[in-house]
Length: 246
Length: 114
Image (cartoon, rainbow over all chains, first blue to last red; front, side):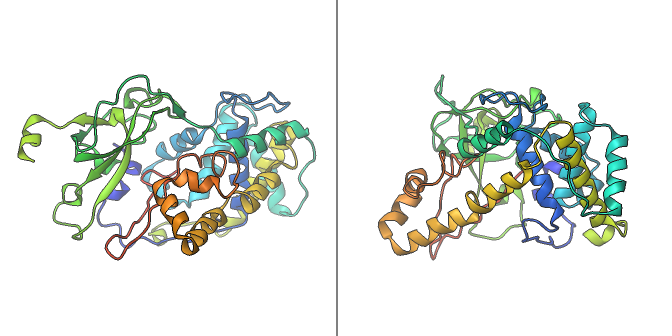
């Protein structure tokens, strides 16, 4: 498991400095816009082809793969959108859209004059597709093909799948007991396959209820319940002994 | 925690220059247009943003029947406000509203952030 997966379970990090601003610096809005455009132009979507040269898949999962592959110290060091800027710049270099040298050269040029104009270009079909994506979204719900394995009230144990490049399972829930609170309608895909981690194809999703004393023994407030939405592959039947003890 | 790390003096300026360089290159390479980023930001500033949630909450404050619908069938309540398809468009499809009571306070967190 990676440090980035278990921030909810780490001690000794001192009080969390909350950041209430959506964008701390004006430049952050631009990388947010670029990322959103990439998601909308990503070729796996069922949207009209455009003149854009973007031809590789980009989803939230790809952004997250970058963050989870960082050195944990760098993960803490950089602000939210600094990580985006690093990850997205690296993606365009790795996939051959730009070179590191031209990005560095152009950065130096804008350092001399941040207000130097952007180039012009592009056709409106690109922006039309992005607008369609923003309005319609990319709904991951699919018809359920098999009955869900669990029902409300079932006692379960969270799994501990192999650590790969990306997961949607918070580290502090691994191997913890819980109770099914809600079986959501239908089934849900994920943005990509996470391989041995197990998500990607459509599967049921549950809201699972946890006793914080199980998550953080002797170190939690009273009258507090923790819920997490989890894909079915992350949830296992509770061992018989555990079910009897309950 | 941030004072544990050292940052260059031109930290923000360098990031601002780098993101502008990236945007410039992406326009030149035909990935996006010169209007793309501005248009995306305009949507989030005018059509999809926290103000949609604020509208829902304000209506729930003044309309008990709407509040009941909002917490029992959130998407049906959202549909009454004429927001873009799929609630608020991208990724707004499965929102669920919860109401605080004197006994229950809800805190919604992102467990594995983007």
